Length: 79
Image (cartoon, rainbow, N blue to C red; front, side):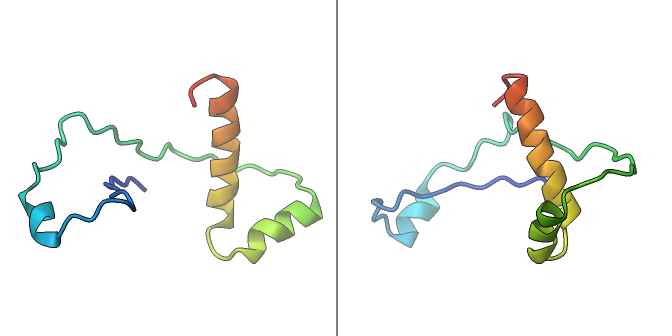
């Protein structure tokens, strides 16, 4: 899922009217990471690790993939 958000500082006390007058977001440099095609595999996972992910509800395989992706990116110096 691709998502672009703009966070407002907790210290900022601008009014809603002022927020509307701010410059619009520049979308020309937005980087969108589209999901890559997935490959079905058979993988042996420790029972407690699998239980931990499954207990967090639907999408546990996606979350497991995200953890593996973050590890790979960190090893490659991308993050």
